[in-house]
Image (cartoon, rainbow, N blue to C red; front, side):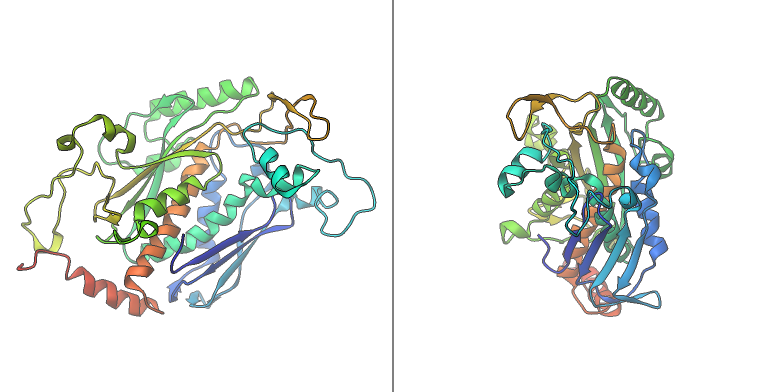
Length: 389
């Protein structure tokens, strides 16, 4: 998916740590552990989170690729301690354990349990559920924070908010006050809807159930022309959709008006290009229904993407299921979990969008250092205007 950046995560939910490897970032970018830590702490917030967040205090320890506060251009590696590891040292031991460890055999509908155990031939679902856990997203947010820092250097800002939770939809009109979103327990700009969302989460918790919702991620300040129309895998829409769809429990992605546009006529869908009056601020659109992309490239308008998070599959009041060994009817496995993952999903969506856009940015303005990329970027910006202006 990435052309200039290589991004990998490793680690299990209750293992010793998570590991992040990020290669392809230029030299000379200002970066600190505290900056990354700010993003990671945002991921741990949100109404409907489970007890795990009371244990973990996520911090990414930079172990390579940064010196004296600036990137070196070499691979950046980070380690995130799992503080809950002390309670799982035998269950998740790297070395062979003589005593018998209780296997997980009750399959959870909606999780990776059944396809994963079948794919790899396991007799213990824990071998699948540990890596399939959303705990892995802590590593994504750490890597995404580095990409975000690059985009910030060039004036790009990325935010997110909850559009719906548990069937409650926010009323959103006009510019979004991101400060209000950050203070909201459910990351909702509509205070009234936010309270109703929390009630929906409480109701689900009382019933031993879970709820999902829709998140919107917005990137502002992007240049025109990231991505490409030339090949299917270079289209910025497709790259964004794949990144957001890869987030745990995501079941749908749209760009701009997305699904809403199919019920309208073309005259009500496409973004009219306004006459150019100011050459320093050219190519203005009357609307932004396309969500900031056309033909697989960014238009210079705000990039708006939405993704839907299904209710998570680990229920305190488990669904009926089947035992892996016997095939008999059982209740699905339950392990401490969240009731709603929509609020933190916004922060994870920001991270994944940051990685895609940073990769496309380096693809377009590539260089080995921030200074070189800046020269390329500034030169290009002078060309994106009417030819005779």
